[in-house]
Length: 119
Image (cartoon, rainbow, N blue to C red; front, side, top):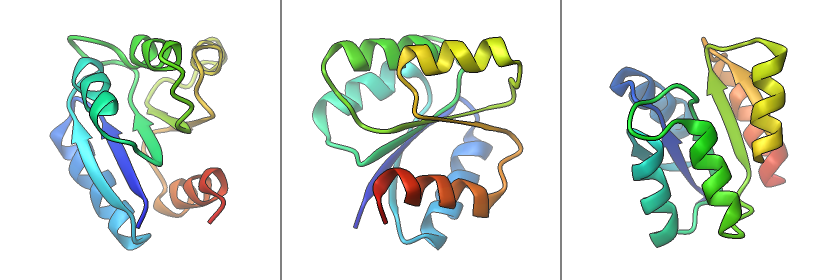
């Protein structure tokens, strides 16, 4: 079973994304900020990462940049309420693969996950 890391400072969002992933038969773990996610990513191989941008301690863009600098190529979907094209460009330049705007449509999120994982 594929394992996905959910990185978001909102416990509601983490719970919501966990429930979506369960319907797609994915295992999930969570992190409440980029620093925690970076630490978990060093200890565990994830098949995919869902990552918010605006978080305290370490934001999502910084997390993605630091993760990519380690050579980690895990597919990343940014899931954020920020929909400006400038923000999308920053996300893609940092190393994200897909950019999804909240509120998340479960079917769309699962489609993107399946596409990136080749399921």
